Image (cartoon, rainbow, N blue to C red; front, side):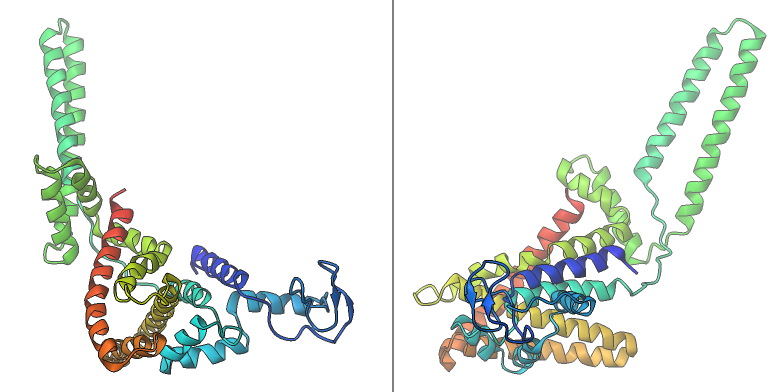
Length: 359
C-alpha cells in the first residue's frame, strides 16, 4: 500500500469536507443556547454559526464524522452523481443559480475524485522494467579519470630512482588497470542487457545524444540527463501529475471565458463550476475504465471506446444545459471548446514534464 497515497486521500477528504456546510440531522431537538457561539437556538442547528445544537460525544459518532469527512457519504452524493453522469447541464445550472444544499460542491467532488483515483492506482503493482540504462556520460568521465591516473603513474615511474619505487608504481599501475577493466566489463554487461528496440532504450539513446551535443543549452541538457533513465522520469512525471492535477482548472477557465466574452451575466465563477464538474466526470469514467481493464482487457477496451465517443456528448450536454444556450450557440462554442481542450492538455503536459524533469 502506498502510504503517501493514503495520506493524500485523507487530506483531500478533509479539505473537501472543510468547504462543505454541515448537513443532516444532529439528533434530538434541543432548545436553549449554542454551545459554540452562545446564541439562542430553537432547532437542530444554530442560526448564527451553523453548529448542531446536539453535540455528540460517542465513539461511534467520531467514526461517523471521519467517514463523512473523508468519503462524503451522505445523501447529497447520490443526488450529485446521477446528474453528473446523465444531466450535467442541470447540475451545473443548479449550482450556478444558488441551489446548492442538495449537491456536493464541484471543488469537493474534484479534489476527492482525483485523490481517490491515485489512491486506488497506488495498489496496482505494475511489472518492473528490465531496462538498465547505461550512463555513457559517466562512463566516459570515469575512463578519462583512469587514463589520467595511469599517466600520472607513468610520469612518476620516469622520475623514480630506486627499484623499490618503480616496483610500487608498477603494482599501482596494475591495480588501476584491473579496476578500469572491471568497470568496462560491467558497463558492457549492462549495455548488453539494454533492449535497443524498446521505447526505454530509444529514449535513453536520444537523451544521451542530446546531452553530449555541444550545441545543447543548459536547460535542455539538464532534462536530457534525467531522461537517460526513462523509467525514473516516467515515475517522476506520474508523481507530479498527482500533485499538480489542479492546474487543469486555472488553465481551463481563461479559455472558457473566451467563449462568453460578451455575456456580462456569465462570470469566471460559472466557468470554474463547469470546469470542475467536467473534469470530475472525466476522472471518474477514466477510473472505471482502468478498473474494467484489470478485470478483463476486452472490457477495458470497450470502456475506453465508449469514453472516446461519450465524452464529447457529455461535454455538449453540459455546455448547453449549464449555460442555457440555444442549439446554434452551443454548436459553435462546442467546436471551439474541442480545440481549446487540446491546447489545454498540451499546456498541462508541458507544465508537468517541466516540473518533473526540468527543475
